[in-house]
Amino acid sequence: MNSIEIKNLNVKIEDQSILKDLCLTIPKGEVHAIMGPNGSGKSTLSKVLAGHPDYEVISGSAKMDETELLGLEPDEISREGLFLAFQYPVEVPGVSIANFIRAALQARLPKGDSIKAVDYYKKLYSKMESLGIDKTFTSRSMNEGFSGGEKKRCEILQMSMLEPKYCILDETDSGLDIDALRVVSEGVNSMKNSGRGILVITHYQRLLEYIVPDKVHVMWDGKIVRTGDKNLAIELEKNGYDWIKNEAVVA
Image 1 (cartoon, rainbow, N blue to C red):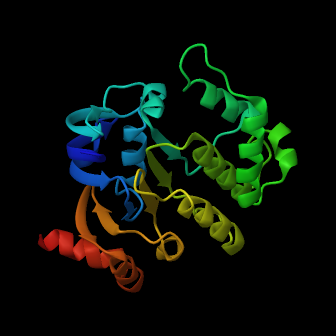
Image 2 (image 1 turned 90 degrees about the horizontal axis):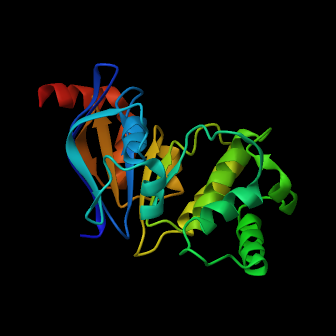
């Protein structure tokens, strides 16, 4: 099946259980959103899927197009076609944006093949223009001295250049003003197609006004407790997470 299929995933860190029998399916061609309060496990899920070494998987599986991701190194997971846009993108001093992305693309080519510089920069500049990124940024060190909005645009630039099978956006709207949010959302929307699955992790419904999801999942205490369409996000915005908490307790 062409999807990310997570079944009964249990994860802990430093003896604290975070994900608890979590189940989730993200098919190609669909945009899914996960909402939930702080501490519910949203970012943990994204990091576990990307191979973060700090988290201990107790049981369960997480397959991407039938390939088990759990146990793979982050670089292997990336090569398989998963991209994670971080909530807080890291700075990489001394490595320019152009060289960073080019190296990532080169690493995905068969041995002996190389990227043609003319074609690479033509595509890079086109993507940068659509994201409102000045061409001079190609020579700047990755995220060094960038504003929050510039960092997020740079993440979307990397994603659009790598063209992954699945994209996970971990609170990409964090710290963005309205203009930056619109530009970043347009960049994400431009990548929506039948051959790619997208998972958006957010606290707020405002992002989902720009990136309209096919399904919205609510996470509470390490598991998915409610799934619906985009109207579920509106309901959450209206009633708050206490509404879900009360439902979860009753359940």
